[in-house]
Image (cartoon, rainbow, N blue to C red; front, side, top):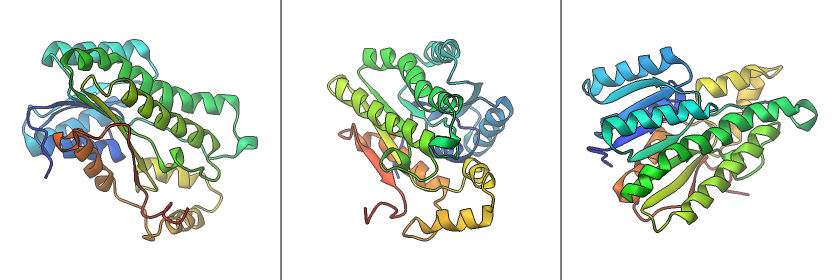
Length: 257
């Protein structure tokens, strides 16, 4: 079991799905977790759940819209004022869009870019100076298998997730000798409310679900806790020599590619 005892961590988009599972894994591993989400009720509910399971001091809930640069700076300032540092940052917040190029408007792409790319940039930029000052920090970005290979009917999503992988590698290379590590996780299909909402947009949701499950060699979607385990490893001291990696967790989707 990888441990984060005494570590301070912040997870974006932690109100549900993969983000909530990562926050849960971090709290169980001994970290103090800042549970942030654009939905205040979801963030608070998740923080209360973690407090009930692990003790009242293990989780703090905050509203955070990652597209708002000033909000990112305010949350960073509060974390640093209270703890003096941030040890682990997980950029998990993300949105999607179903469509090929003809079904994708500039506004659709801008919406995804603002959250999936600019959001990662802004939150990381808010905390990086402190990590550099302490010469210690682990950044884990949640990208997607859509950042490694193109995904059908996901033009905007694929575009932004390729950008997240590139951002991860650039930050890792720039700060490899500064004590700051930056990695990303590239999940395949995961059973989350986000994925369920995407499936619901198809004319035949049942058929879409079957097709999505069949893209993975294991024949099923993955669970959020399976992604959380990878995030915990990358955040922990056990991964001290790992930076610039894009860890693929896709149920064998790309094994034959």
